Every structure is written in structure tokens, then in C-alpha cells.
Image (tube, rainbow, N blue to C red; front, side, top):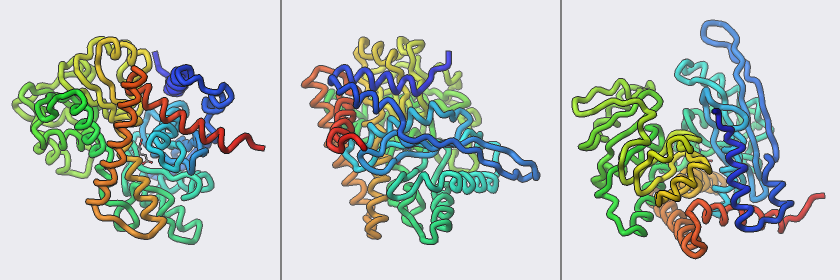
Length: 419
Ligand code: GLU
């Protein structure tokens, strides 16, 4: 049965609302997205035909500051997914105590089937359609699935041309040459790595001795794979949408990344040929015994249907919303530690925030400063979450949600009701 991500996101809110006895009026308010915009995007394709794409931009909350969140391009994009992702961004920025709200956008499109020119026209026209919805003081998009620094450069250009002033602060994740931040591309994966180190320390285990399984080999999965490989971890399986590659001796990540980067085209793992690798259906990924499992693909992957098969010590959520609440319960009973998305993958939006303040100040930091501040904020947040979970004897997800939702609730209380 198809799982509605927004129902899942609301269920997670209900669970924490009960735990903290959230004011029912605030609870009611947080169940709704503040603004929702759906647009049709007409594009002249390379063959001269016209195609209409559907896109969305959603502000879940701007209580704590401008909306913040990525734009994804995927055939699975739908309004419920974008609403859920926007709500999760509200919690993520609140947990990090950033002066930002939660937003998300997306276009329903299979990017592999579009030429670069078509992608550019699609991005530019989408930007025009959401022009009054975004802006440095309103809502600041960033990359997400199948979008990158080039996508952000096009959005920044269209916005700037319409406003008549170059406005780097309208998006984050831009190329460094036009106001992007050093370290942004790898930030989510780098942050995951710091969090992996921190949780292993708490569990008294040595990260470099561990076996790892990763679902997803995009911007997040490939970076965390590389970081872990470099310190000696054995990455035994990686899945993408095409297949799962497996090797009991560990996959050579350096070679795999070189192969992936050989061409600009997206390379599916099923085309990767190596003698020591087994290829199995990607649905088998959650059956592989390992120490750390990293879902770094998309939402609703670990469900009550497959959670019982999972055999690992720690789950590190690189994706947003990869685990359903039903699955969470099963994992918890099995004694598996789940480091939740809004903490584990928050390095991306954190460096986005650094980019945003660098743009506002027109003063840019070196990579050393970026990584130092990234590590500092993430580890501090990790400690807050971890100690609350110990104190209250709740899961890390519950502890993270308590902090995140309480932060937003407090802001609503302080601002009061308008009018
Ligand atoms: N798309 C990323 C996320 O889901 C980054 C969002 C941002 O930087 O605004 O957290």
C-alpha cells in the first residue's frame, strides 16, 4: 500500500505532542503547512513539442525565520511528499537553533530523460512561477535529490534578473564563484560522518572496525561512503535505484567513485563491473547483516514490512524520513539505535545557513572555518539530543523531536496570535 508521507510526518508530530503535552492550539497549527503553491511549468522540448510539468513549493513554517529547504526533481514528487519534507525542515532548522523555518519544493520529472537545455528551461520557468514565493527574507531554496549547484545558479540568475539586482542570498548550494560556500556540496555527508563518530563514541565502539551498508549513492551516500572507507570501515553493500552491489570483503569505494565520475551522465550501479562484486536486487539491502545501516535515498524505505529483517547496531538516517513510525517501534524493540534524520543529515542545511550569512555579509570563510563550525554545532546538538534521550529514557528521535518541536512551539507562544 502506498504510504502518504504527510500522514507519517503528522503522526510523528502527534507522538511528540503527546509526550510533551503540547498546547492543543499549537499542535493544531503545526499540523498545517502555512503556504502551498502548485504550478504548471510549460516547456518547449528539444523536438519542438510542448510538455507541462508540475512543480510545488511549500512553506510549512516561517515562525522562526524565512523558509528553508531543498528543491528536488524526481518522478515520485507529489504534494504530500513536499509537505512532509517541508515539515521535517521546520524541525531540522529548529533543532539546530537556526533563525530559519521549514520549506521544500519539487518538480515531478525524470531528469535522466531531459537534455541539459530542457533542464535549464524547466528550472528557469519554475523559478519564474515561484518568484514571489522565494527570496532571501522569504524562503531560500537549496539542492536536494537530482538538483545541484548548477540548478541553484539558474534559479539565482532568474531571480536576480527579475529583481534587477544580483541576489546571491536567494538560494544556497550555489557554485562558489557566485557566492556559494566552500564545503557545501559535501556538507550532508561530512556531517553524517561527525555524527557517526559521536554515536560510536557513546556506544564504546571503534567506528573504523565496522561494516557498513548504504542505500543510495548520490550526494549523501557517496560522500559518507568515501569518508568511512578512508578511515578503514568495510562498506559491504550499496544500493541505488537499479541494483544492490555486495562484497563480503568490502567494496573499493575509491575505484567506485572514480568510475561514477568518469562521465557527466548519471551512472547506475548495475553497470559497474568488478569480479569480486555480487549483484542482488536492491530490495534485499535491508536483509544484510552489518554494524551501521545508512539509508541515504528517500522517505518511507524502512517500514513495518521490512524492519524485522534488519540486523545492525546503528541506523544513521542520511535521507529525510526513511523510517516510518511503525518501523521505528520495531527497531526500538530490537535494540537498534536510530540516529534520526533531523540530526544525522542536518549538516547540509547547516552549511546552507553558513552560506546565507556569508552572502549577507559579503565575506567568505575558508574551508577550515566551515568544517570547524559545522562540527562544533553538530556535536553540540548531538550532545543535547543524546543527554535528553538518556535523561528521559526515550529514543534519539523522540529526544530530537522534543527539542525541535518545543523550539517552534516557544516561538509561536512568544509571537502570539495574529491578529
Ligand atoms: N535538501 C537538504 C535537506 O534536506 C538541504 C536543505 C537546505 O540546505 O536548505 O536538508
